[in-house]
Length: 402
Image 1 (cartoon, one colour):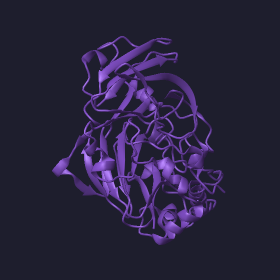
Image 2 (image 1 turned 60 degrees about the vertical axis):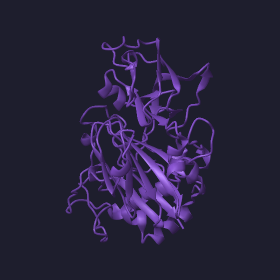
Image 3 (image 1 turned 135 degrees about the vertical axis):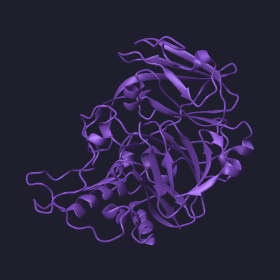
Image 4 (image 1 turned 30 degrees about the vertical axis):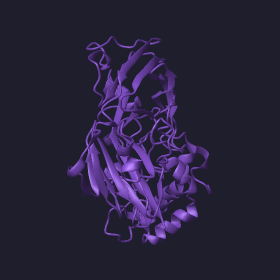
């Protein structure tokens, strides 16, 4: 049993590249969570995630004993797609589990399978894998902040039990390194292609000179294997943005060429830690091609829980790099939606508990952690989150500790 689920990967994410104190990351904050503490939180919530593991988003009744066709092996681990899944517009739906097992066939204990997957989550499976969205420190060259990034073929694990899959990554990881700058910074991003195929990069949401837009055959030649391309521009507008391949993008983004590009407002009073008192600033990138339904490149039970103390305020930056819309739903609490596609909503901010994020969209939400417990947090297209042997894919939890 892991008693300190995130200790191996604690990494604070400052609110700005200046080194000023600011919100911590979900990885750092999760270091204070133990399985006993998680279960205590679940008890406060009247069962919380444990109940959700038996019947997510149902009426709370006790789940029946499910049965499966004769000769079907008992599933092991999560319902993540098979290791041989290929990126395609249909990859995720091809691996969606059946939700209607036959009651007349060989009996399998559905409850035990669902509970086993939840136990892996509670025991800190996420921390056995490389952490997502690790900040890449810029080098300073005169007035420019320089980021050196490589395109790489990688072996990537969706969870700790599934076989690794052939994927693509930036600097050897999926999701790519978190690039964080301040509005008005001069950015120089040097991308070296270590692949055996050509590619290109688009900084999604940035107001770029046309030559830096990153669309091969339109604004630049493809970056050939072994070659490099330097993107140089002034960061703006501020907000939550992304960088990703824009060449054979259905395949390359689906296989992992994606990352977060955060531009902090030049006015420090507008940054989330100062404007709202946010203590955590969490990047949440969804994808739905290679490996199935993922949050930051992982599927439940290898997703990180978000851990906060009662009364804290946290910000989540939803970014959809997939090919499907995902309505994110949080139990027990609500979102205050404060920005869309990097633009502050101001007086148009609104509250909800389910927020649909389309491909390419970014939404920033503020959560006031005023209700203690272990709260399920998942995509509400249910085949993206739960099947006959329990939860998988786009599921995590927000744990509010009293």
